[in-house]
Amino acid sequence: VAIIPGRRVQIHTKNGVVKGVIGKRAIHLMSDEERNKPKVEIESFWIDIAVENKDEALELVAIGDPATYDVGFDELRNGIATSRAFDDKAGAFVVAETLRILAENRGALKAAVYGVSTVQEEIGLRGATTAAFGVDPQVAVAIDVTHATDSPDMDKRKVGEVKLGGGPVITRGANINPVVFDRLVQAASMKTNGDTPAYQIDAAPRGTGTDANAIQLTRAGVAAGLVSIPLRYMHTAVETVALTDLESSAQLLATFAQAVEPDTSFIPA
Picture 1 (cartoon, rainbow, N blue to C red):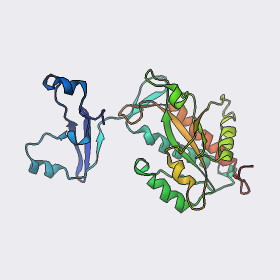
Picture 2 (tube, helix red, strand yellow):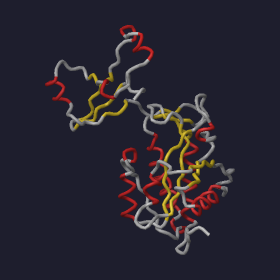
Picture 3 (tube, rainbow, N blue to C red):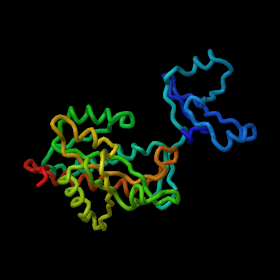
Picture 4 (cartoon, helix red, strand yellow):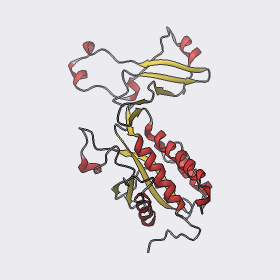
């Protein structure tokens, strides 16, 4: 919530977008205590939509209308892009791009492939829970973002060494089926179009905090994997990714899917 004050927003109403700003008192009018310890409780914020009274406001917006930061996509340089909500629009793009790659060479597929863009991951993995139950897969790979540690304020000791442009991050840990992990690494190690393989590995000794948590526990259990896209500044309006990581993540998933056969076993030896 500390990033909320002083930002432009769009309120999405049934009649269209209403623009507003999240107000913030000028620093000149703050007490010393407020300056040194800003108040960040969510109930202390308000959205100014430039109306004079409550009746005028209710003609434009309704209680419960969602609001988003008024920030768009922008490409910086060297293939680095920034936007709000790359977590997890980037993952949704990778899933769609994977399906496009597979469709171009449909004959190489020996297994049925489903792509899902899940909702409500942040409030309890709800979309993944219902989608995995409905599809009932033998194996599933969650696609998410993970913290890149190549910016000045990051501590690699906490989340490992992950960098933008270093390729997709393949997770290993208690939440991950070891056969799926090994096959993802094998797929990532294969050269595509003559390119040198690039991938990164991180460890998760507990649950991963991603859709893989819910997928693993679906029905009688699903062999779950996790591929993550390196991301700087998570949960801000300036999330940042390397476009090459999106491309290589999709290629990794397509190669993984093409290697699955009807008799492939994901039971660890």
